[in-house]
Amino acid sequence: YIRELAPAELARRVSEYVLSAARVLEVAPLIHERIERLDQFVPMTAYLFGALEGELDYGWELLVPKKKFTGTPKDVHDALLEAAESLDVVREWTPPAIEAPLRALAERLGWKAGDLFTPVRVAVTGRTASPPLFETMVALGAAICRARLRAAAEKLKLAGQAG
Image (cartoon, rainbow, N blue to C red; front, side):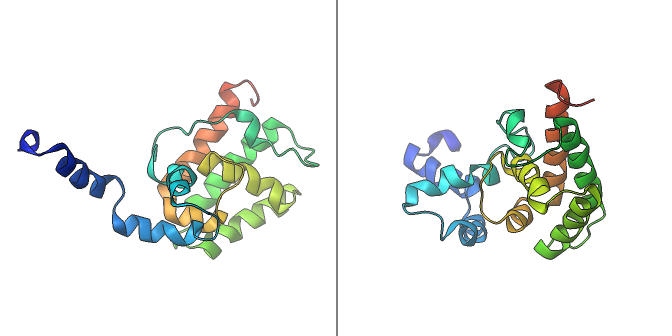
């Protein structure tokens, strides 16, 4: 049946699975004020649609904040694992419910919130800048965020930057 479809019809039907209108509607508020042209939508949100369970493509160096951060890559490794563990117990996956344990972790570590949020952002999006972090994490979903945090910690370990 699929082979009998015209290429244009196949593309139309597949596009519903790749980028459904419902998913676009869910993500649009995150980037609405950040894009200037429609062709920026896909590059800016690719981490939300592709490689959802696979590894994102970024260098381990992005995980370590550069501005006045005094911690080591090993510290970031440990913090990412602690972040994943603190999010394991979050039942209501909402921005405030995600933010609270991460802020508490930053305080416990003696870090500025941004020093923790930067590696968390990179871990879940593969980028140092993205739409609002906690709303983005809600759009990605709990399982994906936790898996990406652990994968980022492993990336540091594999790069020889963490024990």
